[in-house]
Length: 167
Image 1: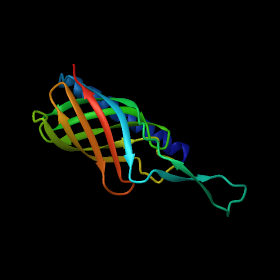
Image 2: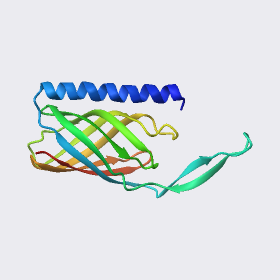
Image 3: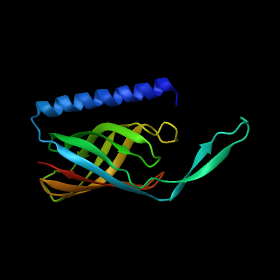
Image 4: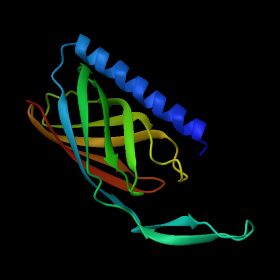
């Protein structure tokens, strides 16, 4: 990915984060603190292009996915069924990802719910992954603690895990 594209993606992420913070502050909402923990892929490894001295020659190195995707985020309620979210984590390709977006979900008053997280994410510029995040999820919890499991059944086949706290 070109440097200008990376810069545009970073600036868009920062702008979306600023807009989300402003909207959440206007709603006087109490935020969730999200702790990103892990992911599990359908396969254990991926192939990373390896530079060679010859343009016509392609080489790939097999690498193991990072399953310890530690990071922090913040989620703030915009309405009963929509939360704005932003944060960072160490992604499966061992790079730091920044993200910003929304989570549209069933009511958060029930102990079990489901939703769909959508937004933009950085850190995947050198892969075939798009900078768009769309991740169905299941939530279990109460008004102070929740466990969120993201499930991506197609493509890289991925399951993610995070825990959130509200004070």
